[in-house]
Image 1 (cartoon, rainbow, N blue to C red):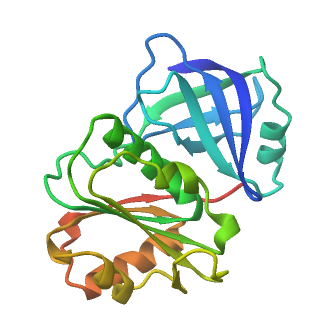
Image 2: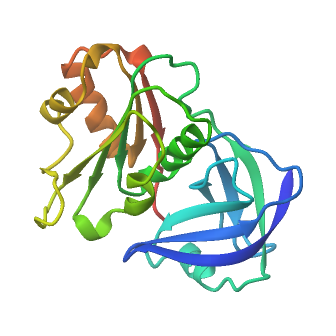
Length: 229
């Protein structure tokens, strides 16, 4: 079913990522980790799947997009408070539900958006499951939601940064997310549930690293971001 969402606010997260907030329609519900199809131009043909980057308990809806200069991104940038967009959903089943033990979230770049939604909901529920977030980015300036994630009220939460170009201001592993980094940061690694979110090439690479660690495919859930148009 199509919905009309009223644009409220634009929030710059990094030099390359922007959040767009909308008023939440009465009675609308979604599960953390889901996404919607969003048409920024009423009656237009350009559409993109965008994950919720806010928790389901918030009184607004938020989607965060990596800006590429595409026609779709240009339409988003033209939005002004009060403008109406068309959306369909929610869609998707990427979730931490059903896992009773340690959860390891692995995010690449803007793949943090559904994971941030999941972690925000866990914090709101006072979830006591141990959670490790391994968050890969290009450099320190590319880390979206850094302060929000660091301030999560989760009693057993750790955030591990992996940067291709570390700047020295932040404690981080250098390079790409690897089996060695995962093994060093996750206790009892074969018993954890893994949530991987990011570009398809990144997700595939991390799946290979987890296979090298002997992680069962049943313990891996993925969300592949298909394109950045």
